[in-house]
Image 1: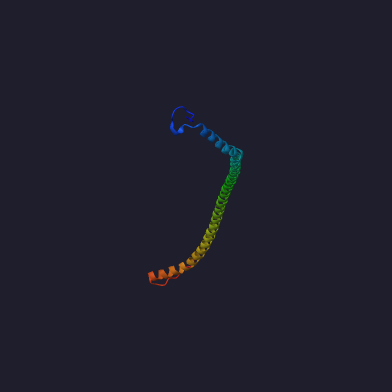
Image 2: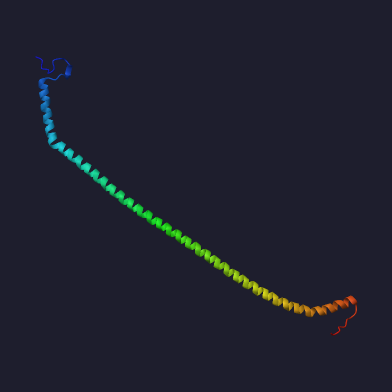
Length: 158
């Protein structure tokens, strides 16, 4: 008797009726316990994993948003600090320029005072020297004239 299900010969791939029934019974004995206990547990674990991944992604997005906000705040603070620093540098430059101008004016005034005092001192010394030279010039002139002439001179009064 041909217990093969297919009427032509395809070798070992042609199932027999008893082998097919036995295979279906074995499949049912393995499938039903797996589908009842193992597959729901695997599905539950996959769902939990997906929830954790999505929760982690949401948490990561919140952290990124906070980091972006903090970075923008820090950049705003840095911009304000740079602006303040530039303003302070400008103010210091202006104050330094004003101090240099004031010092230069003070120096000019001091120079003028020193020059005026020096000119007055020179004029006073010149007047004294001229007076001393005038007093001595008459005597030196007489001595020189006596040497040239070779005789003593007598001065006439005016």
